[in-house]
Length: 132
Image 1: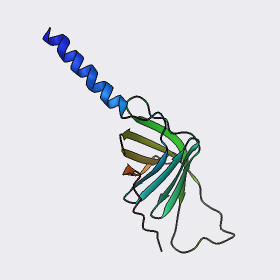
Image 2: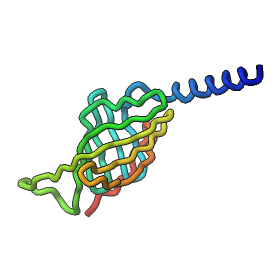
Image 3: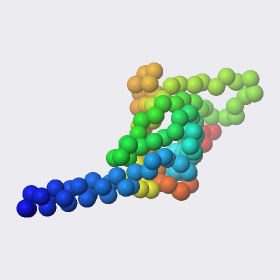
Image 4: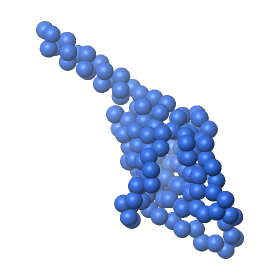
């Protein structure tokens, strides 16, 4: 009977974790060095000295994990010239959402370079310092 009780508690805890995973990531998410604005069709990202775009919905699985493809646009100091061609790099955005917290890792897929892992909070303004 104790074994059944342990399984029941484990099942209830798993259900609680799944309840914290949204079916679709939407809204404003902010943290140190990154802000993400998501809607039903994708997301835009603003870093200290870069930007990004996700052109597909962010749909976490039952455990809150997701992996979506997008683009990363490295920035530079100073203004963007009118005739300047924007550099575009393919990127993968891997994340975990639990309630109002998101952990997001950004990897450039053409080089396997991990740009960083960020912690974002739903509804919080990002702290982004633009490069000069």
